[in-house]
Length: 446
Image 1: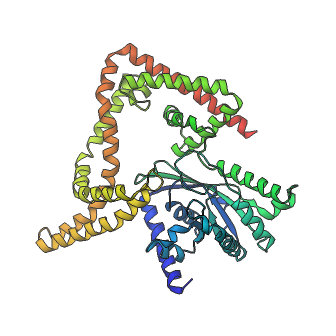
Image 2: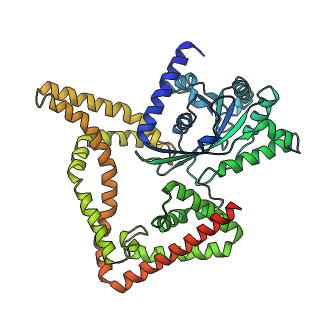
């Protein structure tokens, strides 16, 4: 690696972490006490968000992490040089080029040497980025690398599971929960493992998978995924738990009851589906304020909240008008180049947004200077407008989500019997779910 690549890597690393923190300003870290600050670490993370995930792991550890990445990316102009500068390690997949798979031995040797030298190496053991609410099959690469590294001198090596959980990974300002799991001290594991050879590799792979699932929003049965949002909407009004943590707790509870008491799980699931259909027929959602209120007073309070929200209309309009053109340009560019699915949406919006918005702000300042109008107040306004843009990005989706149902909620309120029936049924479902959640939490403590 040349000195220029090292310098470029350090610059890009700092810039990337800065930009990701702007795009995802609400990052909450759990389990930092498990994180070793020095020494060899093999970080194993789930992979829901393309090239944003390695940056987020780097932010979490606060030190350089040399990630393994698919080889074709290293041939991409500019990006390839940046990845090399960051010390990333190419891996060769059969789906990319079967003739190059044998070169994976070089990649494994590089990873092992980095660990022997006391560095942090990152790997996505599922082997790909995906949108599924589950940890897919964990491959044996983690176990092979870690056991070889220990045998060759990395005695203090730990395997560190890291769960990356995004509320809405494609949205600007989305909340992110990073959960750091209990590390595996590989040397101790091997000494206490009764198996050897392939059985030891398989045993360690299973343990990595189990610990990764413990820090990720994971559903054992993907067919239960459509119910997860319904369960969060039903329970969240009574729970003080943060939404992402609540989502994980509910997913873990779903796995438990599907495994231990499937008839009960299917019964509550069918009741929720029936209730959702009836609510949808009224043009509402399970999150509608009318279904969560205790009575007309609660609904009037909700209307008051909407009225207060309308006070933000003027700054939201100003933020929208100023940013409408660059916003549409970024969305158009990103939509043309982003692959199918949501795994790379935020990445391409970031890559398109940085130059577009920078050019827009600089051009706006020069425009005021050229016109000699409102100078220097025009420049001050341009510097303030980005904050209004961020406000508008959050304001409009929430307003558009709330307004269409206001009229339908008023109509339902006039049909008192139907409203009380739906509200009471939702309250009953919520109480049943909370009891099941408490039952799960008690059993998981023992």
